[in-house]
Image (tube, rainbow, N blue to C red; front, side, top):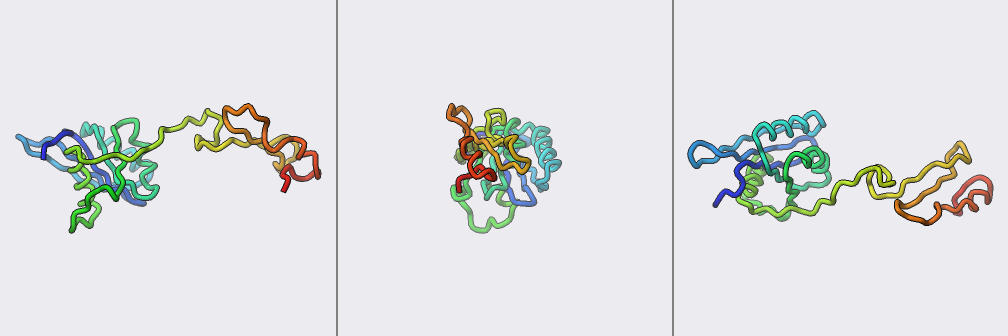
Length: 179
């Protein structure tokens, strides 16, 4: 197959480890591959990013298994062109049962341009009035009771009054919730 991407990497992501394979130009028209297994703690992910940058990698593909891809994606998204690939879309070849073989296979498919990335929503900033950038409304504890029973919740950009209405807070005297 023709090589479309000169410097790319394939990642096989798990809970405690990330297997990474780099595909780089070698002497003549050959390809060189470098494989390394790293941890998933923040210092390990930063080391992974530095290692990929040191090898001048431009594109990275990773298998989307559960939620384990999220911290890795977050660390790498500003430095590389990332593809999050659904595991069902990877053509599993019989006999490829190890993490190293999987990351090598992902890197080989990526360098030939045979992978299609899944949709990853853009990162939200925490300044939009939502709680931690999650898209959920932010709730503020009101000054009424020290227990925090008076809450006001408002969707960002909404002109509607806070929920629950303040008339409920005066009702029953203890709880601002009607139920």
